[in-house]
Length: 309
Ligand code: HSE
Image (cartoon, rainbow, N blue to C red; front, top):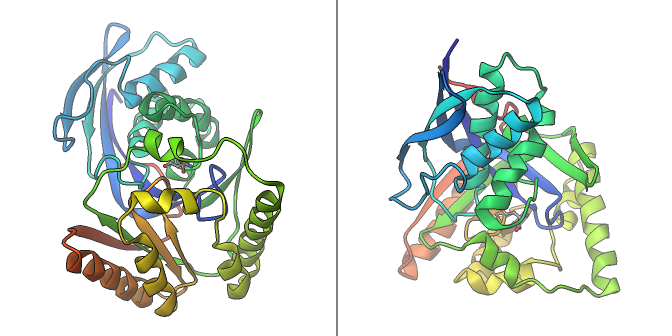
C-alpha cells in the first residue's frame, strides 16, 4: 500500500467545565488527508482544498506536515510523502479544524508504515500540529478526533488520556456563526491567574459532568455543563452567545457552551430531534441578527479517524 485517504472528525472541546481537558468527536464535518509514499524522504504538500488560500504550503508551517514529521522523527523513519489536504470545515470555527487535519495526516502516515503505533500513542505527535497552528499544544481536540468518543486528558506531562464510558446516548447540536475567532486570540483573553474559589467551583462542575455521563444522571450532567474559567471571558468574542445559551436552556438542553475556543456553540441533549430543533432555533436567532450560520446535529462519533480509501 503506497497511498491512503483518511477522514478525521470535528470535535467539541472543553465541554464547559473541562477547559483543555475534555473533548468529544462528532460525525460530521471532518477533514480528509491523502498521503502518497514517495521515494525520497521529506514531506511535500501538493494540494490544499477548501481553505480559501489561508493555509501554508511550507511543510515546516502547516500543522499536518509538522505533526507527521514529529511522528516520523520519533519512529526514526526516512519515509517521504506527498500530502493533499481537503478542508471540509471552516478554519477558526471552534470545531477543532486544525486538529482534524493533523490527526488525519498522522493516522495516514502510521497506516502506511504498517500501524506500528496504537491510535492513543499518536496523540503526542498530533499536538505538535496544534502547537504550530495556535501556539498551544492542547490535546482536547486531537485526542477525541483520533480515538472517537468522549476523551479526558488527565495529564499533559506525562500525557495521560482516557476514554469516558458513557451510560446514556448523547446528542449534540452545533451551530457555527459565520465569523472567525482565532484560538490564539481566544486564549489570550483568559486570565493568567484564577481565584481559588473559582477553581473549586470548576472542579465540582467537572467531576459532576464525568459522573453524570458515566452514571446516566442528567441532573449531574446539567450541573456539570457550567464554566467559570473560560466562558465568562470568551462570551464577548461571540455576538449573542448569552442569548443563544438562554434559548437552548429554555428549550430543554442539558447545557450549552462555547465549542472549543469558539465561535461555534454546542448544545447537549439526550434526544436527536431536540438537538436539531435547538440548533435550528439558535441559527434562526443568528439570522435575525444578520449573522449567517450553519448547524450540525450528531451523536457521539465512536470511531474517530478512519481510512476512507
Ligand atoms: N481547549 C482549547 C481552548 C480548545 O479552549 O483554547 C481549542 O479548540
